[in-house]
Amino acid sequence: MLAGRAPNAGRFCGNCYHPLAADRAACPHCGIPTSERPVAEAVPKPVIEAHRLRRSLEGRAVHGIAWGGLTLGVILALAPLAFWGVQWWTIILFFGLMFFFYVFSANLANSLGDSLGYRWGQAAFRRRWDTFVAERDAVR
Image (cartoon, rainbow, N blue to C red; front, side, top):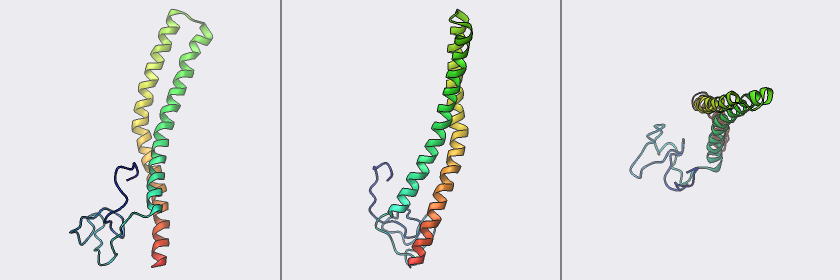
């Protein structure tokens, strides 16, 4: 839905907004019966925005770590060229350090970045979700 491949229309749980099949009388995700909370025809905009924020923060953590590692790699790879000039060993060291930091940054971003980004995104989503639920239930 966030990427625009699934429509924001149909039959959704009125509690958690998980998609519901036409024959379902209870949500398979949260277990709330449709008799307790009526089915929604669309996911509310605040819920979609909370998911967008979550995904944005996850990506920001991964990209930040990747670009930070690559930047550090470029600085460290250029240092021998700056201090000792262009010589055969400084050129080999430059490409070796660039390769090392490319692989190191990719692995660090995919492990630590994913982990931190997931926690950061989930915490932000949970705060928005709790606010939305409190406002939604106060209206009822």
